[in-house]
Image 1 (cartoon, rainbow, N blue to C red):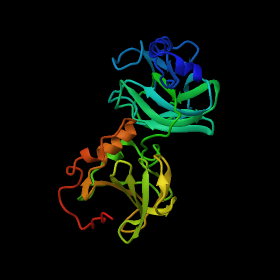
Image 2: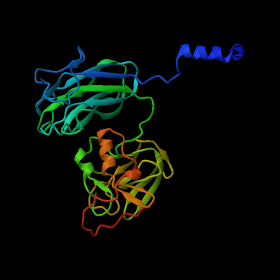
Image 3: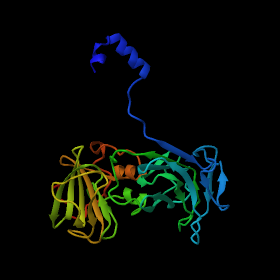
Image 4: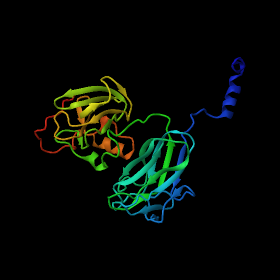
Length: 320
């Protein structure tokens, strides 16, 4: 240390110029195309096409649904180290493609399935989520033909990126719990949304924040999550809580189990967003989360256009 401090500023600057700027190591990213030699495996039931301009690379693979056999097309990758990885897929979209294409991720804890609407969001990377992967060279992401929905199932390319931090956002429910179309539904007569899921479905924090427990006749068992952005994210009708009042939670952390408590006519999750005392339409926020892209700021969400035109007898859940 003493020797370094005696060097002139000119010498130190010259040494730094030789070493280059000090920057954090970039996250390791692996991209596998359907044409990558030795890294894609599919049966003769999968055809090859270059029809869509939204494809990744020269072509993509497609297959008709088959409810008698899974017939998985696999993307193989060499994972250098075990740990959390962001898994993304690329595919061309078309109204005639499958609305519930089953993608499978071989995680360290077993195979996870994610249904993807391949009629939308084509021609870009779409997140399946962050998963803990084991190290090694193996079949990591698969596309199955086992779906009852009509339309071609498409396998084009996957991208796997090491993730050293925690996710910034999460869907409020497991991605497989509902199709994308449910996150665009209007609410009764004020900005909010009701997500129809059975009792006992895990509910997750959409972002990091602090929990305030709700227990009343309207919301039932619920939670107000004060996000790190200052907005309030409200969950209602839980069957039970998974966190205590005042707890700090991270995005994707389970905060409760859905149910039918409070003013509810059937099991579902009521979800709302507000900034101050202003209720915001959560639909665009949730659609972005489903599509794997950064959601709009809560303060930019609309305050109208997400509820029925006529008022009903449904009471408004208090702001809390």
